[in-house]
Amino acid sequence: MSLSFPTIDEVHDMLDTIAEGIPQAIFKELNKGIVLLPQVKLHPESDPSQVLYILGEYTSNRTGRQIVLYYGSFRQSFPGRSRERLYKELKNTLYHEFVHHLEGLAGDYDLEVEDRISLERYKQRLRSAQESKGE
Picture 1 (cartoon, helix red, strand yellow):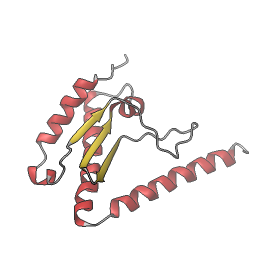
Picture 2 (spheres, rainbow, N blue to C red):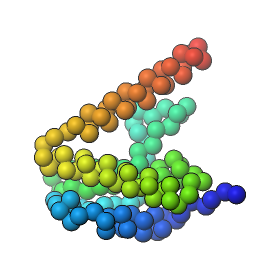
Picture 3 (cartoon, rainbow, N blue to C red):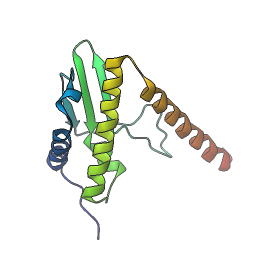
């Protein structure tokens, strides 16, 4: 039996529930809030053979700070998963973006370094896969 993926409104409700459990102090200076966009977002270095979706992003610029999550990317990344599993993935992603927010406020960018290391691992897996195919 295939599980139907929740609608964008249902995912928005899940995010609201997750956000309600986060202390208000964590939202400091997140003036543009948390946004759930409908689209799929691919990482600029994504390869068609092993697609790399962007689930969420923290943005900070002169107009403010916000967390953006991509419904379409979650839908592509976690098809057929239970609502409980999807909730966990949403929570992990939201918390990850909040770490970027808090580090940005503190002038610390350790998670950005970890993200770059993860991207390098992805690229190494691609190279290894291409080498094993003889490309």
